[in-house]
Length: 378
Picture 1 (tube, rainbow, N blue to C red):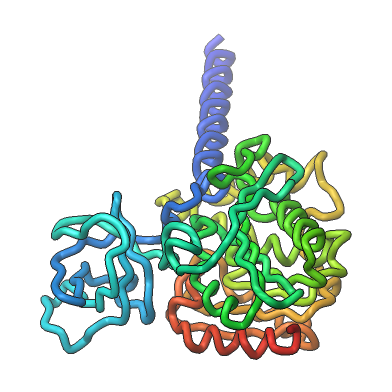
Picture 2 (spheres, rainbow, N blue to C red):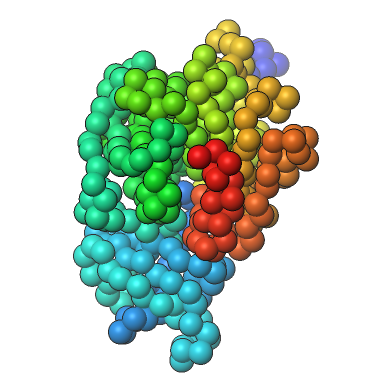
């Protein structure tokens, strides 16, 4: 009897441990599969505002606050734009002074907690940039998708697709540049975004199913006069663009891809986001397996358009903007893609930039690389 009771107790412990492991894996996988739009990724540290003065802001000294370039600074109810570090400005050893470009919402007070974000603009293209635009609806497979359309002269449209932790406000960083070069811009909100249909399972599939909303945007563009489109995506939006170019029946309308911080290894991205939530290393494989089970990446629902994109199937010129300081989407796969398809893929390396912020680190160099890429496609 003692042996039977001991075996039963051991089995109970094993079942409980297994259930706890499954629950922990599901929780850890939420860092990517339930990343809310417009909220910082868990890799982004909170910074304390120490003081503000005319054209200056003092923040906690950290690797994030020392980044080169220009960024949004978001807090609870506030948003500002901060420029380069002002090394010559007086400051304490544990602080950093940056140029304060403008406060676009709320106020910044000493003691406020905030985080840097790639998004400089809030609102819409009219209120933020003074650009004429239309609020439109794109018919997607799950329902109507809100989008902004900024008209211009050319018959090649740019379809802009934001990524993890961002909203369709993020592509406004390059919207003025595109408008100056007379590209119509369609800036899309896709499934899971505010105002867009909710995915049936409530999960972000890291581009694997969301790309069909990009296909819907191409269909809209062609119906309304576009001869060709360039897909410009950030993060998982870049992944969506790449998948669309390979799998969509409308891929013949795509004349080029611009991939900023593309998520080409979703397992590495999921592990990075889960680890940033302080998930113990031993549980990270569980998070990956949980994500596989929850999204159907492997198993009964596997389709031809699931899994990694085969670089050999890429047929259009592609500009990849990425760098080694991206801790969310490692740039190794981007380098390998550029090496494998040197006939079509150009890699513009950006150093010192976090995920989705290649433009922020050096807007001038980014836009020059973009200009050189787009000129032959005009």
